[in-house]
Amino acid sequence: MTDQPVFDHLLQRLAAQLGLLYPDHDGVELARSIVTRFWPKGREAVSSRQNREDALWDERNVVMITYGNSILEKDEKPLKTLHKFLKNHIGSTISAVHILPFFPYSSDDGFSVIDYLQVDDNLGDWDDIEAIASDYRLMGDLVINHGSSKSQWFQQFLSDKAPGKDYFYTADPASDLGDVVRPRSHPLLTPFRTAAGDRHVWSTFSPDQLDFDFTNPDVLLEFVSIIAEYIAHGVRIFRLDAVAFLWKKIGTPSINLDETHEIIRLLRTLMDHHEETLVIITETNIPNHENLTYFGNQNEAHIIYNFSLPPLLVHALLTGDSLYLKRLTRSNPPALNGCTYLNFTASHDGIGLRPTEGVLPQGEVDHMLAAMQRFGGRISMRRGPGGTEKPYEMNISFFEAMQGTVDGPDEFQIERFMAAMAVMLALEGIPAIYIHSLLATPNGYEEVNLTGQNRSINRRRLDYDALTAKLDDPQTVEAQVFAQVTALIDTRKAQKAFHPNAVQFTLTLPEGLFGIWRQSIDRKQSIFAVTNVTNSTKNLSLADINLISGDSWHDLVSGAVIEDIETDFPLAPYQTVWISNGAMV
Image (cartoon, rainbow, N blue to C red):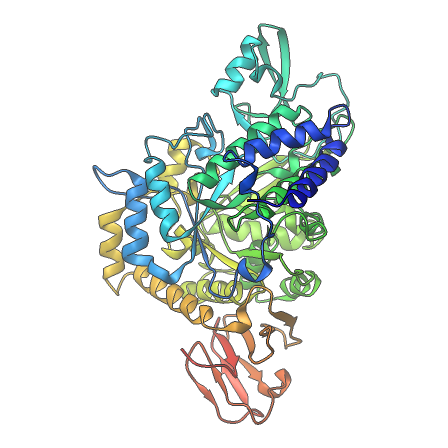
């Protein structure tokens, strides 16, 4: 049973946070309502221990990102097929799986949720979700900024019936909305005729995705109940989708507002007092200095996406110049205890360009955009100040993005792709690999033609039997990439120097080489992770990375033993070495 002082302290803390958000409401009563919804079994379920930092993650943690229906088999629900693929082909290579929204939806491949408490029957049911959660740590999306126009809540809004009539954010089109930061180019407000008259609803992402009004505390209470339900079904990592846009305030940019941060802090308070080890990750695809604020003071997100990594990594491998990638790794502060980065090369969305703002000169961005289009990619736009349109993201399969350099395609596609994977896997943080990167899936032009959406290019659905046949044939590109990536992951997982919070230092190396030094928390293992980002052979001077004499050094990737620490080590085009004094695997 929870100690009374622990419960009282939690209640006081929640009341203080709620007082900042809802000063016109009784904070203590709201806090009691939240506790009742979050711990439906009663306050005895409140944990007296907060999440232990050493229990959150270690070097063995690797996430796979996938849709519930990325792999299909005839006459079988996709979630069962996904689970079969995980068991038969992935096994223990990954520790966690992020299943993108698996709820009934009306658009945006799941991110326009109709019913938050049901699994889309086309995918499976809660039993399927729980089965996957029993084998892997499950990350689920909390689509918290907006809901579907087809949802019961929005139908209540249209009918002016409780509770939904007060759940969506409306604004007068004559209001000053010029400073609002937009991720899309459609109008910000969508008009609807309701039983209460004509209303204009805030729609950050599309006219089918209507933004919730979190100035109404009942909306927060609804989402607390939803979180509790997800926990009951096995979700342990909560991805707060588009959370930067959560709180709106006329006359402001309506992004990254203090109230948004306070809601994240409140959710962190709840999760840190749960008996399960729960983790918050914020999906905030914004410039890096803004993204970093979502760590808070170790009291907001446990994990933030390293959104700057994909475009800067692509740029480095396209140009052979890692200057801007080095600036990122040098400028990202070490994550404090209980916090870390999620590193990735690609996801279900495109490769975002907002993180390059103020980082990559426009000329460099233009070269990258031209190369992606040459490799069959698409460019999505957003509306900037004054109604101008600006490139927002590059839509392309990551494997296809590695076709060549700014000079065009070449013969190093697999090597370049593996270089990107190796850099990502070595960085401070937890690596996450999108299923279509793991499987070297090509661009999906049929999907784009079918949906009319650029993002569909990297959201293909694969036949299980055909995929299995390709993975079983060592001559296929899919099998070669899958084998190389999984082998590299398994090597990474055995190295304590790759703990998500192990020390990282960016090396000063000659042009064309990118490298970092990682040291394990107990200081017993060092790894010098160096990648040739060019299409020509480069020499790595081992003297430049200052290997300690007396230690036994070897390359974890190739198995080569370093006999002379004063010599040069030639790196083939896009080759990576992980030079370590730790054990081989």
